Image (cartoon, rainbow over all chains, first blue to last red; front, side, top):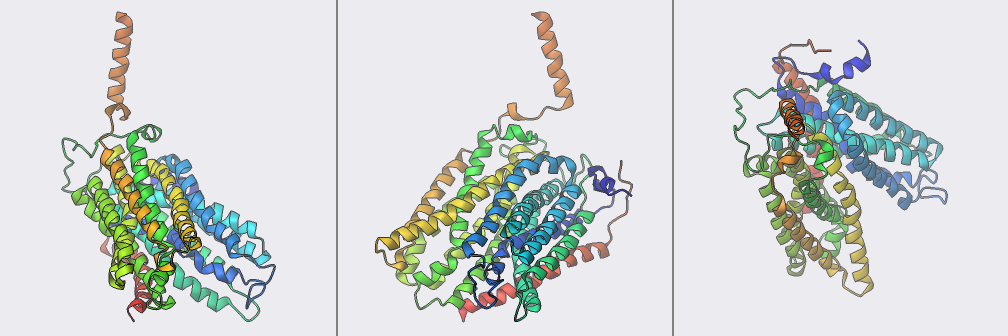
Length: 467
Length: 41
C-alpha cells in the first residue's frame, strides 16, 4: 500500500461499527506531544551552559537569545494554522497529523544538530519554524475531526483534545529533566541526546494517532441523536466558506474576545512565580511559588475540559460572558488579596483565572462551529489562532513593562502589579462588549447547496431572458 | 478510493487506545500534583 494513498482523506472514512470514542485518544496522541511546547523552558538554563558546563562561558548562548525559539514557535503556530487550515480540512486528519509528526520530530532532530555543533540558527529553524508549523497543523486538525464526530457534545469533545495540549507539559517536563540527567556527564550537557529521544518518542506517538484517526461518513449522526429541525438562533445548520468567514463581524468579534482572554491568562501565567513572591514577601518562598505554578497548570488543563463541557449546556456565548465577568471581578480582587495578606484568596483567584484561560481555548472551536458550521471549522479555527499569537506578545509585554515602569517610579514591589491587574480587568470589559455584539451570521455568507445554486442560476437566466 | 475496513471497534481496542494516552497523562498529573503540594507545606 502506498503511503500517499494511506494518508488520503477517503481512506480515513470510518466504516460501520467504528466507535467514535477511538477518536479522542487519536487526538490526544497529537496534542499531548505538541503540548511539550509549554515545557520548553526546562531546556533554557542547560542550553546556556553547553560550553561552560558548570556555568555560562562567554561563547555560550544567552537566555534572551534562547527566548526567541519559543516566541518563533508560537508565531509559526499562528501563521501555519492560518495558512494551512484549508489544506488540513480538505486533505483530512491523517495527512495533517502525519505532516505534523514529521515536522515536530524533524524540528527536534534539527535542533539536536544545532546543539551538537552549537549553531543557534538551527534551533530557530528546527524548533522555532518547523516545530511551530507542527504546532499549528497538529493543533487544529484533531479538533476539527472531533467536532464532526460529536455533534451532540462538541464542547466536551474539543475540550478533551485541547486538555491534552495543556497536559503535554506535565509529561514533557519531568521526562526531559530525567533524560537530561541520564545523558549529562561532568564534561557534557545532555540536551542533544534528549532532543533526539524526544523526537523519536513523539514521532511514534503522533503516528499512532494518525493511524487510529477516522472521519465520519457524510451525513453520519451518533446513534439516537436527532439534530434540531430548526436551527437555534446562535447555532447555525449552514456552513460558511473559510474566506467568507473572515468577512463577517462575528469572526473578528470572537477574535478580540479570544485575544483578551488569552492576553490576561498569558500575562499572569508567565509571571505567577515572581508576582506571588513579590506580593507576599517572606510568606511565599521560591519552592512554594513553583508549587503555585504547578497548581495553575493543573487548573489550566482541567479548565479546558470542564469549561468546554459546561458550554454544551449553557451555550458558548454565555460561557464567554462568565469568563469576562468573573475575570473582571477576579482581576480587581487580586490587589486586595495582597493588601489583606490572604494567600488563599490570591491562589484561588489565580487558579480560577487560569482555568478560564484554558477554557477560552477549548470553547472557541465549538463557538466557531455554532457560528460558521462544521465544514470549514478547522480552517476558520486556524485563522482565529492568530489571536493567540497576538496575545503572546501583548500579555507578557503588558505585565513586564508596567511593572518595570511602576518600580522605576518608586512603587513598592508588593503593589507594582496592581495597575496591570486593573488594566487586565479593563480588557475584560472590552471582551464583554465584543461578546455581546456576536449575533448569528447573516444568511448571505452561507454556502449554497447544489440545488440552491442551480435554482439561483435558473433565476438569473430567467431574469436575463425577461430583461 | 473508498475505505473497505468495516471492522467493529472492540472493547480491547478502546482500552488500549485510552491507556496509550491516559497512562502518561495520569503520570504527569500526579507528578505535577506532588510538586504543587509544596505550596501548602
